[in-house]
Length: 243
Image (cartoon, rainbow, N blue to C red; front, side, top):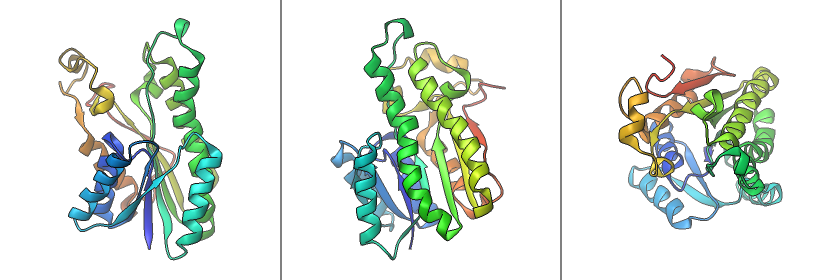
């Protein structure tokens, strides 16, 4: 049975992506969470309401031992299942000017996004390499491409993810594993709740924030057979900010 592992799937973009993958591709969804079990359970409930299936799996992506232990246990207990799709979505923001940024804010943001991508991908890709197939989609950000004042830590983390995407894609392409990144701009979610949408949307040619479902549709496409010849790409979904 083919499965998709979505990290940070208890809320926001991760929740929408998990639901869309189940709906479009009929994948068994592994819903990762670190602290919000109720949110993860809600994601699973919505998937089951749509006729899909999956389970929740708790581990902290920034902790390699925790990640390896949880995934090793799941893999050993589910020999009939194969994680054919990995979406590295987990991430946090700790905004602030660089000159006054606490070291912990730098470390926490980078450890969850870029180190978390390393921890989860290195474990999951072993089976993909043996099976000679797989889809990896990394959720980057406009911040990682443009750089955003007040988000030096987040911009660094997502920039690292983009560089790793391009390099890893070249390493595993011969094994029919694609590695791509999606770079959302301003998307309505819990991570943008504190932003002044009325003011910021004027930066966007489409004059609105995007929807989580719109990002989920793009991820679903990249995870499908239709995207078999697309790898090493960073696809913007930002309402034309770069136009």
